[in-house]
Image (spheres, rainbow, N blue to C red):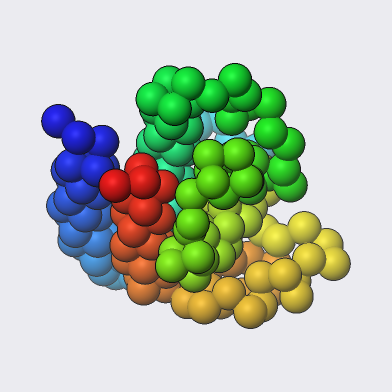
Length: 187
């Protein structure tokens, strides 16, 4: 099976999974909004049943899944280009501002792919990387003095220092990941 076909299958699987997660999110959000708020002891060793919420975990999980898909396939694509073109350098030998930037530099500068048609996708994926890193490294809170770096990201809202993800950001990120990855295969 061609890599582009495998990428398409993986993206379709994520889309189906995300549709199920959005249904779960709706159900959980409804249940959580109807739940009675009870006082709790912050020094308590066990979590009270009334405080076990999951709605806030769903969208960040989706972002992490998209970026994992992107990272997995970019590594495979770069290795495939190296082997098929008998190149001497590996993608790991190219330095960039981020792993995503290193892959992009390898593909455009060393493999000499023209990825101009998917530059918007690359920009969206770089925004995905920034937002995903905020969830991974700081629980969705933007580091001090970085608010302006996130304020311009479409479909992302800031509530204080906390990032709020609109569903459109997830769907667009998945679409751009597929588009960019298929272009990166060079087919």
